[in-house]
Picture (spheres, rainbow, N blue to C red):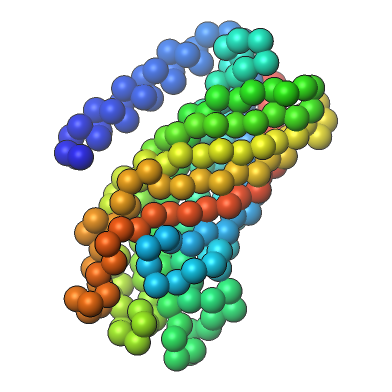
Length: 208
């Protein structure tokens, strides 16, 4: 997709968000949690890259039992050769991808406690680095991953109390997120790569 078209789509989405949440009533707060990730399509498997994520969110009721929720969060992703891999290991590899992610989700409240989320959004890559070996070949520092990623997400949550909720989400890239991937050797050029993330979050509600 043309980079200018991507920018226009992002501006339109942000404008829609501002229009929606400029109306009362709305809720908001902060979120923090842990995630584990992998990159489907590379030579490694397993949720071996773990990190802490945090963000802010706003929501607004749009129908009985339904809310629209928008979040902006910092989410480190990537992959690793194994959970306990160390830099001096012969087959050590670590891919680091730091994103600012903005998902837009529809939230369905099954009852007063239990709810489900379904949504999509975009993510902007602010930092990327790879280090170590890729199947025996020395990797380059820069990854060539796209600056933009488009994601889908599904989750389930539970209201712990009046001010706290907990949720678990599965998030996946909707496009090939590494079209310009720089492989250390031509035979290691993978056809497509997708961010694959499992996360747990705590949400603190703040009154406005």
